[in-house]
Length: 534
Ligand code: ADP
Ligand code: XUL
Image 1 (cartoon, rainbow, N blue to C red):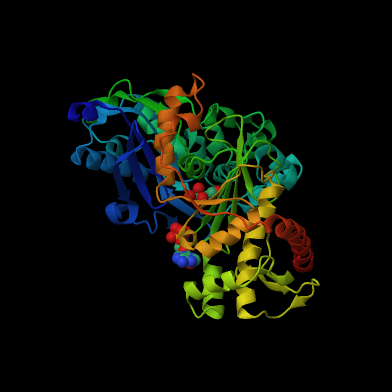
Image 2: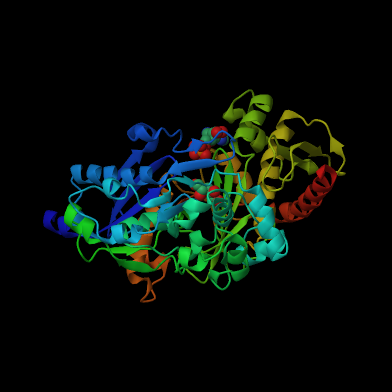
């Protein structure tokens, strides 16, 4: 038994996220057998980051040092070795990175990567390998001008969304690249390759430049998500010679090659260990949740995030469409809402005496549809839709200044979920028989909130622990990568993973109530947009 365990295969999933580098190892039965991490601020204090980043004086520019990520990998692998992980059992590894960040490799870095000396750590050897030492990350919002330029060049925001899956966003890599070219022309000139955080991390393991995968590549405002090739018009509007600086994109399931001999000699990896393309953290989370066609995942954290599996994408001005990370012919969508848990907490404090129990009781004691009262609760400027303020309406669509506490609680929760459904449907999502809603994040511990979610979507709600979803998804993708080319689907490859728990099923009248209410919500949202437009 022991011997079999010791020989059994392992799959590693890394996550280069904003504040830390994490890893999980799963065995062939998809049990997690090892987890580890390196916190950037506390374990690599020499880089003086806060939350893993440097916020510059203009408050808009946000960067992280490329060498910090390299050093974190040295440290993480040493910790794994110390913990006794047997690297020779690892058949494949993959990983994810915070989306949109860019890494600029200096001319000659490829030479260094292919000739790494196993007696020295990566950090020593890659000191001079980056032409720009501070990499712009997803929190950067300093490229508004470049966003405008790109949209003008391609024929408007909606046209850009039709090509690349999103209108121009400051954090999206193409706009960051354009800004680098303009503001740091010499450093930009001396770069031979530009990676995303994900493909940069894959390059370290591969000992060579790794391709950008379709899914993370969709977060750049540069990839044509339908042809899955770089969009000429976007590349031209961004910087010259981008084709060769970016390399050709590949499916997210692609095996990039064997692990570099550096890791074989230094850590005892097997020569046959494969590196599967790395992707963005959100696509990797979709894999970790094992989202399937028709499913929708709703993360109820500080802010709310919605993930969708899409077959027929309909890019819109709000939200992002990415190529799907587990099936290259399909798509996924990501929607972000700023007014999530913090707004629920504010209403809980004002209407339920600060108690989740009383908040839940209000949901139990009020009927589906809230007798026609409906509300929009945007304490801070919302992303989707761009509206701010609290707006309550009576059954005749007249705006009212207050509601009774219990009605207010239901108006808030119904309004939030109607908004999640409306914007998901605008991107091409539709509820089909068998649709599951996967709920995660802090508020997913609240059964009454999940009952409203189930009713508004008229679909069963399941909960799933997502604390490690990007890492886990990467380990699953490593395993799948080995068999993807022979036609095995991702869901077949990860069948043994733990199943989500059913927690709520829709009320029999839910469809009737909320199909109508959704139409009304859309109309009122449009009215608010008109009224608040500058
Ligand atoms: P993060 O996005 O920071 O990872 P979490 O997913 O941990 O956040 O969610 C934290 C939020 O969960 C808190 O802000 C809190 O409002 C919410 N939360 C915790 N317990 C409950 C509950 N019983 N009902 C509703 N919301 C809850
Ligand atoms: C997604 C986004 C963030 C980053 C960091 O568009 O910007 O979620 O991926 O995690």
